[in-house]
Length: 148
Image 1 (cartoon, helix red, strand yellow):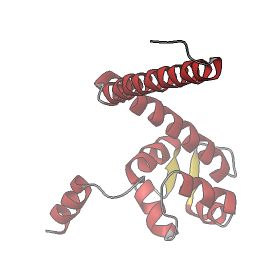
Image 2 (tube, helix red, strand yellow; image 1 turned 180 degrees about the horizontal axis):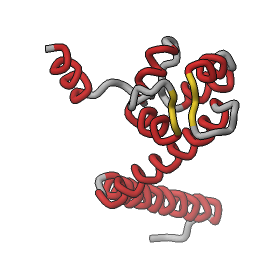
Image 3 (cartoon, rainbow, N blue to C red; image 1 turned 180 degrees about the vertical axis):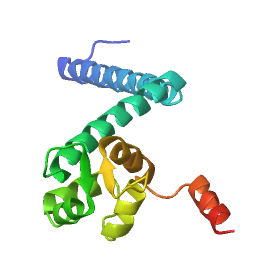
Image 4 (tube, helix red, strand yellow; image 1 turned 30 degrees about the horizontal axis):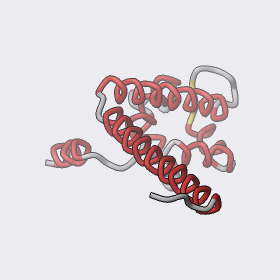
């Protein structure tokens, strides 16, 4: 092979450099995608993430309890609940927690697990954990068993 002009040699070096970086980018992408896929199916990681999400959710529900309770005691009455539900901040908290607030009385009855007319912090936390999100199959099955 004969000598080539320095411009063509420069173009060749730029081509080789660009191709090398492109190849390294593809290899890195495949490696990262593989690591992400394996982490997604790691059960310990899923348990840890679910536990962190639940702790964060409970923290937010405790803060909501402070907004709902006007007397700063350990219980929320129906009147306190109704008046608090008129505030956009409280409605926003419930929406952020994934709980529908359209029917205040039904929501209060759902949260009042011991049916004494008040909601304590534990009832609010447990009720909100149960009511968040869409209905699950077990909820629908429990409802059908109760109506039979």
